[in-house]
Length: 196
Ligand SMILES: O=C(O)CCC(=O)C(=O)O
Image (tube, rainbow, N blue to C red):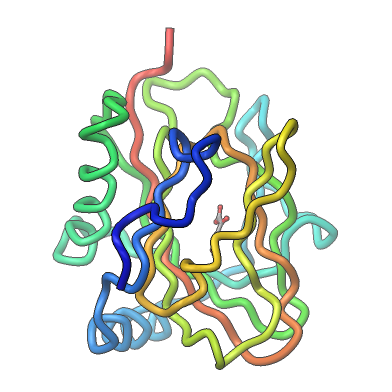
């Protein structure tokens, strides 16, 4: 296990922090068992301007289930948001349900931002993603980030099971198609009043 953000380049480190292999395998197993037991639905998309849900198989193919409780799992995810936010200082007052995602062979999620432009009381400001699958158990399925000037960054450390990525919701990211095996992840979003 390395220190957080060892590998993230300077130009991205104000929008992305990676904590390599911080969640132990037993906890990952427990989360997978809980997530797999929940009802799955097709992973939705949201219209950036209206917030309306829609589906587009050219942009996203994944099945997801939802954790609604503010329990130990929420607190685990929140602890990483807090560690990063001590430095970033976003006003965080709220959260969305947490998303447990399963990417099977051929599944993917194209470039997108988690922050919508819809005016609401609270907006998503921080995304926290936990990698739940062993690196060797699937091929493809990489979480990648895009900066319009600098190009694509793939945090290699995040591919290890138990790794956590925390990023600003304006940062474009994608999950490349899974070529073999299955990949599972858990995502939490932390929200606060719109930026002024
Ligand atoms: O599964 C992941 O690694 C990321 C999921 C994601 O990008 C999202 O749900 O917005």
